[in-house]
Amino acid sequence: MPKPLKIAIWVVVFAACAGIGAFVASRSNPFPPGVEDPGVHETPSPTPPAATPWDLSMFVKSEHVLHEGGACHSDWKVSGTITIQPNGDASGVADADLASPASCDFSQSQVQTKAIRLVITGALTNGSLRLSFSEGGRTPVGSQDLGGFTNTLRFIHPSVRLPAGAQRGKAAAHVARSDGDVGSYSSTTTLRLSLQ
Image 1 (cartoon, rainbow, N blue to C red):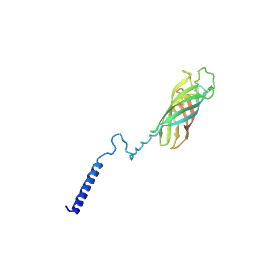
Image 2 (image 1 turned 120 degrees about the vertical axis):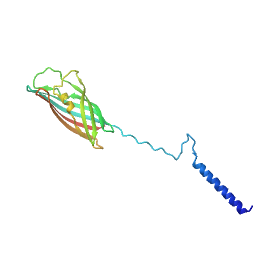
Image 3 (image 1 turned 180 degrees about the horizontal axis):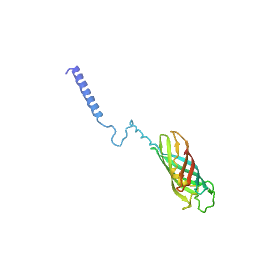
Image 4 (image 1 turned 45 degrees about the vertical axis):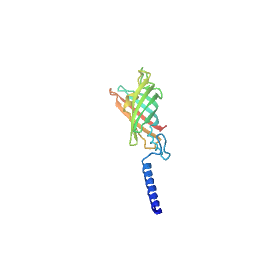
């Protein structure tokens, strides 16, 4: 057999073997199950946004004006915490403590409430947090708030500006409503929030 023909046959054989090897390699996994490919890096999953806790403080001046004449006053200091979820829902609790003895323009024998547990809900929408309050209990049990703060509580809805990146916020709210007997309840609230 002539030498050039032998060389041509061997070139064809080597080319066929290389082609078959490349085909088999493209269809196989060089790393058996349980062996990690050193060239593959897992992409870390994004961290979900976290809820943000805020410290809340309020000062409330309340008054009950009676139709017979005279009025009762009570002032309250409130402190607590609210948490704003990534979807904007807010919730928390706070304690309102009588800032100074309640006073009336006339003598009375009712037991004045000393402390009130507040339940807070709200929603953050377009950089504005609107809050609502309800009573979660009082001390002493069965006592009365002479100044009427508890009678205005569910009508207090301060709106706090909290744009993205804000560390603090403040708001004020004033409520006035009838006591159902020609008299009236009123309260003025100043509120401050600070990011924990």
